[in-house]
Image 1 (tube, rainbow over the protein chains, first blue to last red):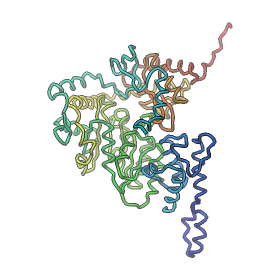
Image 2 (spheres, chains in turn green, blue; image 1 turned 120 degrees about the horizontal axis):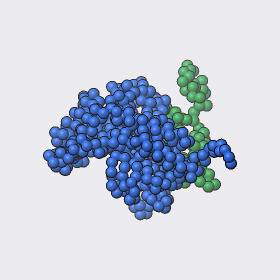
Image 3 (cartoon, rainbow over the protein chains, first blue to last red; image 1 turned 135 degrees about the vertical axis):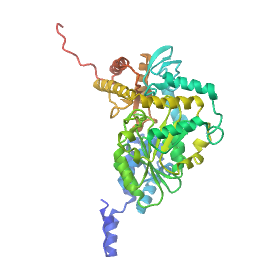
Length: 104
Length: 407
């Protein structure tokens, strides 16, 4: 899936075109987060960027950490626990994932 | 917003629990009769939830040692180990535990909780990495809050999950400390320690193993999972407790690290609390001698584990994944678990009830812990009682009807 990152190509332009399709997009990250949060949805209210994870959803702190662990493996990043503690909304979680994935 | 408003959700859940008529979190032992029996609600009750794995709380030699120590040195030390609270006996106890493990150093703490809290939070600091199993004990989680190291959880008992997280750290500087438990306290399952150690070696990570529930129970000499798995030398730190197999209270950590003693002046949970009273130190020293002298207690414990685990499994109960001194019985939800727990108490059997958020994956459990001195009759009776309650509550299918002639 992410093998393009490992390709070493002499020509810079070619490298750029190879890497860009595998770069994470925000909608992709949002979709993945929503997928993992769907089981905890309450009522008809959709999960959006402004959704406050611990408040608007029926999810406890342990389940949040378990969900984060799934996302970590999906995007091959680690989100330290102290960073998780600072995340409140779905949008903030997406930002954190994009930031950590870009640093990889 | 009031001070207690943040706990509103928990309060609701707790109210639910209490409406069943008996509060599992405020149970009173009116009188403890032996390691396996107590008077609860005016009734003689079988104890199968006290972590008293070898039944040493009433061992006459341990009791006598404690009484003698009180007569000789009084009821308490009234001071911390770095002030007036270090007696010759504390030092002797540390030496004996170090010898028990074949390690060079040992530090004794006033509780097992403090041992994990203090040691783990002192070992790693800014720019270090602390990796913990997702099902870690609260004392390990609390240690995470007291360190500035980056804390990352890996999937329970999954060496490949640890591998991925160590790999992602890459070549960043800083120490890596991996924290594992010999036997996990809720489901009684043990860590695949050998595989974990291989991963740790691959990335040069330090290993700390908490043997709270496995000391005494596992290994040829009862040193725990690290001994049973043959990796004692690869474990940089081993933490344990005096409050389970050794029948008292307190905690310890052993290590071969030459600079180990610096922990005595860096570990706040060691420095800023009173040391263990002489009676506890004396009974623990004697209990350690009993553990060494009576390996048959370990065999009795595992025989009892087999009686309960296999008995319940044969009736169709869903249990933890393997035989262990802790047997976790899965129940479908919180209220069923509490109702089941209460029905058992009414029938004269005490176990622990464990419900979210204290359990992994939101499961509701009856947590049974075995004792070497349970009799097989007591445990067979327990299986019968639980089977009856299980059928009444619809947790187990109705009994298979045998073909009955003449009807």
